[in-house]
Length: 538
Ligand code: ADP
Image (cartoon, rainbow, N blue to C red):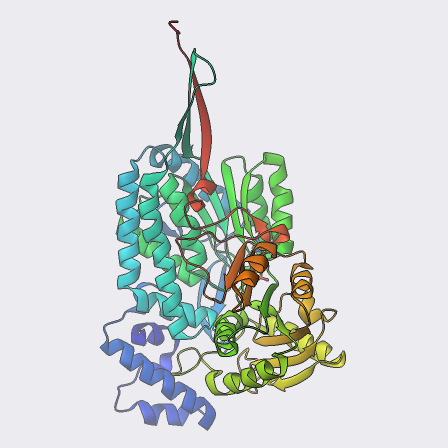
């Protein structure tokens, strides 16, 4: 790692293996010492595995194939949510930097759009292979800046790289149609062409995969890109640029601009309003998604919006309770509950409610471990920032005030870092905020229901429509319920529902368009009807 990286940010690591214990002991208190020693062991382990994270940790943005500063020279710090320590800093770009990146992407589009699908396919394939080759370095950056456990970060890199692989394959299959003629003197075909420069705004919870799911599709279609990653996690995005360059992505095809939260809004406005941008793809909150949509209206941009969710997770009386719990552990506690498809409202039928809650409490106690994402066995990293901890804490406290009971957890973890203990609440009702709002934290809120109709009515009684899950062993029920749920994704006796092969997208206020699968590339293609008038010989 790390040693190179850690030396850069942690001067105390400038010590030999022999002296390590002594030096750190002099500098730090007992608690801090334990932490430092763990990190030191890790650094040494990573160094001996030949990993060099420093080569991937950038302090500049990437525009026109160059590593660039903000025009203003300003920077902002990136911190580790596990301990608040500064990892480094990157350019705090503003609207004028965004304009420059857009112009670059527009100029480059004129050449990139004419490349052959096979050429784009080869480049995307090489990018995929490089991500796989450097998965440990990329995963290290994710755990450092975002906090998820290292195994989860490795999982994200595999998922992220797979989008590049998927789109390297899809680029050669953007078939159009030759349609039956509407008249004897006409011939009609529909071709698909790259739409133009695509702008992307991505969140912090999947710092790598949310980018490749968009950029992979855009490049495959023949579009060029201006992407702005979340301010919390720009390092992973910039590391992807390093590998894009190595893979042979030409300068100006992928441009990544970084900024603080303060500059997110002006940059977002520029991306939405600039006529040189043809497409906006956003993943984030409903509130910001709606704002971006309104800003795109004037230039009538094609948009993809992957917004929030309030996923129901329904357990029917007929379900295999152990299997449902196993599914819930993934759907609820993955990334410490910080995914937009995390189970939010756990609806359990009255016949199995008590059994389910009791068994779930035991599994939470025995399987989840809170801590720094690099620590062996940790499943629950920190929440992204203090604001997130406060939000989760308020939701738990208000539910308890309204009658919910805490079965497990219920509070923050003492000590530094943005940690919240895995929490199980029972006797939750549909009126409580914890059932209405997207929790985005490790809180399982269990609601009791009586009938299938009631469960469907509760599940659909939300303006969100992203993911949903249910467990049943009644085959007729599995058809009825999966068809009745008003959600873009339904897991039936299955919680791991996403993959590059299938569509990801929400109904209602959860979004517009879909990513991945055979339709994902269409988000970056414009359809053109070409109608030939020909001389007809009767
Ligand atoms: P979260 O609360 O999870 O950060 P947001 O929707 O606020 O979700 O943020 C998702 C992404 O959108 C982040 O990259 C963030 O910086 C960016 N963002 C936030 N506000 C705006 C805005 N007004 N215009 C453009 N991007 C924004």
